[in-house]
Length: 212
Image: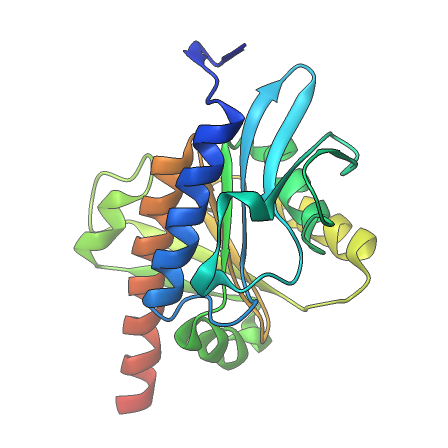
């Protein structure tokens, strides 16, 4: 199976990589307890995705705690139920052509999402770290990070996310208010880089606001 000119990762291999990332995000305080969820595309036609099972502790995440799902979110392989936010992963994969989607629940992401919610997002500019985002070549880049209201009605929230992605085609991520960050990449390596960069920038934004 081929994804955009490259051999698709094996399910067994991608589960190991995702589990390692999940544990590292826990260690960095970005996904404590059962928070956070991660996915990676295994094939495009038919669409098959590896995604975290719901309710698993990210500090002890194992490859066995992932399931393989189809384009409808139906489990095709593995035990357990897919993440409750599967519909959001599917929306990003469809509209961005993403090869991986990562969702964190950091303290700074939560604080910033509340602080800037009234503006519908925040502009981030002037930082060298921005150059790690796909397509960005200068620290002078203006990155708009949208914020949307959280909602437990996942089909409804997925519709809001789809509209957001269409409205902001150059965005590299978005925040759910009081919840956390979603970002993605062409593959898992790029998605990991985007998460690290955006979490760094969210902490900078939060600390700057706290110090006036």
